[in-house]
Image (cartoon, rainbow, N blue to C red; front, side, top):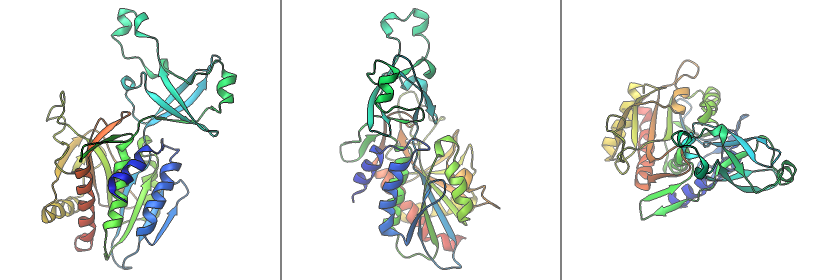
Length: 347
């Protein structure tokens, strides 16, 4: 299947953190043809393994399956749904968003409502409306009617955005953080030939709420090397200064030198840079981003795992819709393959 079609299927699926079922099923299907075995661990991580020599290094390459979203917190007497945020969401992007409530009965469409601007006082207009003051309107007239529709406390809520391609290279869609990493992971395993090392391709859960899946998966696998595939903030847009981020779309994947949770192990950094330079793969170096990835937890597993990150520059992450370059994603897959092929020479 073409990469863009894989990304489209993954992007359109619902996988709010802790409720990754749709994405998990897709990842199992995508990995199965290109690994020796696929399993699901106790927490719901998907692990595909390509076995190598017994004495060769073990590589864990991970992409998180979950996305930011909402969860039903309460239904009012009038039938409005109150919610809590799952993952890092800026309250400013919530107003008037169309959402999908994933109930046990069926998906339901809703709209995030607020007090209309026409009746806001001047002081109110200058303030960001906090999430606690917002609600989801599903068209119900009472709590009884909303509950009859299937709405229950704990139901996940995703943004209602459909994947769209803009020209040959640029796409927009939901949850590119980190469905693009998942698509790249599937592509890596498809492209990967015979290698000495054992490769664990892992779709992790609950990264957006504390890097949880990577923590337990890495402990169970005890790899020798870890590589996280993720999305990163793309600058190059009005209002974003070079000192805030120099990473831009269409300039290749980003190799993390350091972020809030990880200082990339020198041997892993050298492995990734050498693979990019020898393969003529465009790439960027990133340092100082105040965020973190699964690599931060993989690195701290047991007695420690040398780890690094390959990221796809993505505009507007942690919002309902994001934008990225397909060429950057393709080059991220090429870089990961080239690095894995050389792991045995470095570790």
